[in-house]
Image (cartoon, rainbow, N blue to C red; front, side, top):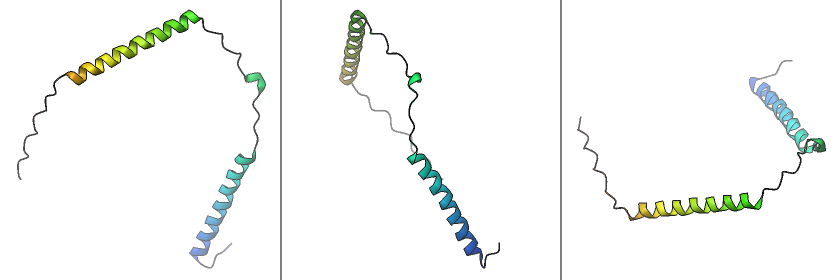
Length: 90
């Protein structure tokens, strides 16, 4: 197959690439995939109320400690760093 100019060969190659990519994009969008119901795991066991309450209490304590640490950092005095030394002129 011979083309009259390199430009027409490039255009043909670009058209072929567009058709190939267009076909791939259309195929994946139109396919319907159904989940295999045998792969669905069993429902997890219910956590005991005591364990939930203990986790909630622990998270509340952690949050209070974080808030206290943040407040103590805000109240500390801030010392500005020393300025960088001047660059010597070459």
